[in-house]
Image 1: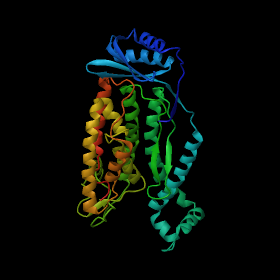
Image 2: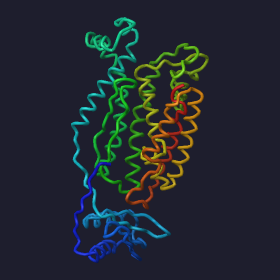
Image 3: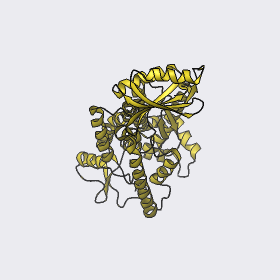
Image 4: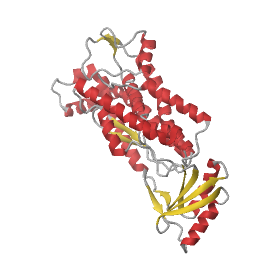
Amino acid sequence: MEYRTENTYAPASALEVIASLRSALGQVMRIESHTIHQAPLEVIEFSGQLIRPSDEAFDIIYDRFTALGYTPMLTQKDGKEVVIAQHGIVKPTPNNNRTNVILLVLTIISTWFVGIQYAGGDQLARLLPPDADIGSFFGAIFTHPQLWLIGLPYALTLLGVLGIHEMGHYVAARIHKAAVTLPYFIPMPFGLGTMGAVIRLKSPIKNRRQLFDIGVAGPLAGLAIAVPLLAIGLLTSPVQYVGAPVPGGQEGNSILYWLLKLILKGRALPGGGYDVILNAIAFPAWFGLVVTMINLLPIGQLDGGHVIYSIFGRFQWKIANAALVVLLGLGFFLAFTTHDFLNVWLIWALLTQVFGLRHPPPLDDITPLDRRRKLIGYATIVIFILIFTPIPFS
């Protein structure tokens, strides 16, 4: 998160601060005790019993505490409700949308060029000598504008899936009045043409319902466009005899992907030396499923971490530990069977040690999800299972 903390309330005395905070809590909580954890008055903990529903109580506490210059956190300890007052409130910093626009333009260019390489095939072979360098490639593109159209489906599909995913997060955050940036696309002039896109929350998450809505909106929005585009791509992609698969050149199967090929192509693929040759729509749409699958891993502050913490609370921490064991198992399996020691699972296992396995709690860590959100959350877990790709490339 990107924000600054401002101390907006200058108390005359410690007694005045305690009295003001206790008064702010008086209508929603029977206070039994308070403890100052960081002197002089940086962190104050109030323990007792709420006398209103937790969601209603926290809204009142939040408004009153922030007016006094404190950020509240609501949790439970030893069978009692606990309100922790942290001195200072969050003030989101202004957005600089110019950076978002520049990165988007660069990513459009990079994915367009990769799309030309992916779909150009025979045309590029006719235009370029066998030993052509990168300068010759760019020269061919600028002297033969018809190549631009060839790269367009790839770029539109990939950026469409990634962009809709991030805009799902953005719209959900705005609905909840959370401070958030527009998506930052990450250009990459080789490989897939991009390293993805991210948004940045610039204010703390208030409760699990807000956390769930923002977290789940991205994957569901991205899948809503990725799955239809994948179906269209598969329908327009040929099935050919390819013989033995080239190591590292075979895209991996998930349950959903395997079923789509079975339904749309009438056979299990790959099989018998035959496979579908993904065109410039099918491949980036398939990759969109892989990106969504990775985002739904139940670790840290990935979308899956948001969803699992929203449903199960701090039990997410144990789930994340189990997920790390699975990542390491898959990673070492790929390392020893393919000699790829920089495979996706070992990389993510390493990243969890950098960014953390545990999802931080929202400010209100008591109020549970309602039934509708829980059902959507369980459905999202099923979706994750359906799109999970143990071996992304083989």
